[in-house]
Image (cartoon, rainbow, N blue to C red):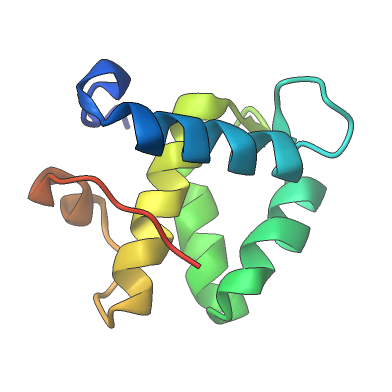
Length: 103
């Protein structure tokens, strides 16, 4: 399932920098990919349930590559942010628009 996130270039420069810093932090081996192991360690800091985080992974790794690139990582962050505000995690959340930061 493909989704159309907000184009990265339309975000504020400050948020682009923050997302890049978070991505670099989560990418433990610096290969430009967030593996399942990386995601488990990093996204668990959100204090969401294991089931919620599995749903985030299923949506963002929709091609079942086994990793997230930068854009998918940001989408995961957006979903987690919305879930932290007590929204159920669904594909439809992505169409709500806006920039999200969490933690």
